[in-house]
Image (cartoon, rainbow, N blue to C red; front, side):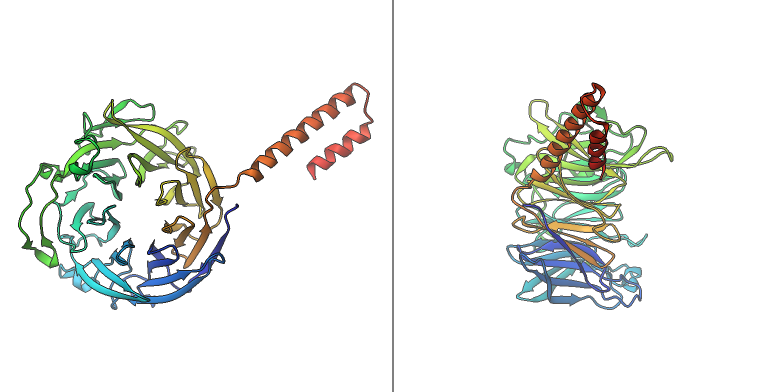
Length: 457
């Protein structure tokens, strides 16, 4: 089966966040921001019909005037709740109050606000909640801010679950949970913290021999970048006994701390093959949802000169128990430019990406082989993409007010490409035989000329 895809224009609604509550129910977050743009900031609820891939708006929640658009979100599909990041008004932020982490419930076709809390303490530099991720067991939500802070909150209470992680290395981009750890991707490093040792298959097996070292593309260890590798909150990473609940500022109640918050491994940017002198930057990280010993990272390249091409790669890491380290076991070059968003399907079979050239694509997670690429999927690069809960659909959204829905088959059909390769090979062989016969005098030149013309039509 070949994937089908269709585009929908939402009419003045730039989209910045998305997620699926079910296989056919989609939540989109977007709007015009805090400024007086005339574009409402909303959460929208859509039903996606199969197999025609139509979008039907069934519910919406409008944020108050002056508040920001929801820039990131995560959903608990079991309880039909949404956690998203949307700043308060500029006036409230200037007063030091920003209830940016918000919890909503979906009742039928209605989105209801449940509570909002403030985790950020600094309002300088126009900060916002750029990453929102729920743990696999739906008991912890991680939020990452443009201030390079990572806040781990209990879910659904949104009370603080651990000390704030201040990422001092590079720019914070992404967060991913496994059952026992959390991986935090900055532009320069991936920091892996142990969260629940009791959930790890072997006691603290994720802890590397040297947390300030990681493998490069050849599998050898390279040193972490000096002065940048350890987030400043690592001093608080020792085990803590659960503490009693106590009220905190701005609605965040401090409850029992996680049993362990220990920096286990720091991955540095690897040297990629055929990448020349280009500078690389981590852009995203995802654990395999069914295999905590596998994770995927996106590396974008920035050129040092006009002659150096910018390339984007997906890198596959696997945990090696004997060496007690993460080893790169595969790389996939996506193309020129950079990857803007990245996702893995719920069963871990497929990886999806949106690129700066406005294309989107799907990659086989095991072989890291490209399966699908849609050129010109949007007019602007994709800002968010998600697989639905049964992995039958992929949705990509953009700030150009468009949503593209792609059907994802159980198995990608490569017969078309195989047939083309065989046809070209047979045609080349025929042309070579005819040429040989011509030079040996067994063939009329007019026949060869006619055959050559046919191959170029």
